[in-house]
Image (cartoon, rainbow, N blue to C red; front, side):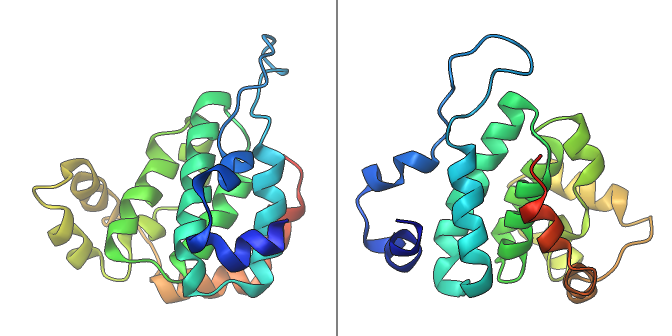
Length: 175
């Protein structure tokens, strides 16, 4: 099923994607409540990772949006969100900085600590600020705040993730 979705995402009816959309499991306890479909997002990401291309960008965005919502609702660990962010970052457009912003600042406290700032900066932090000026002042303000601290370029950030094999940790650590 996952391989079919990966290969045909753009041509599929929306209902095929329902196994990846947030679905509350209906439980009430703090450690019991959760998203029934999170496992499906992890599985498809594991299959997507070795073969992903720019053609998969809409699917990666969709999965990341669902994971952001799930992390905000259920305070999950950030590994899957980090993995999806990395996949998107390798081919990101300037407007994707908004999704990266949401992973860090619109989910939960642990994500705010764990998610890195470099994806929000994008390819060029000054161009990113100019793009969001008048559209989303929060992103501009965050970049202006964090640019005063040490950070690395997008290319160096991607290389660091690859060199340290972080995708293996993020995808195979069951958080």
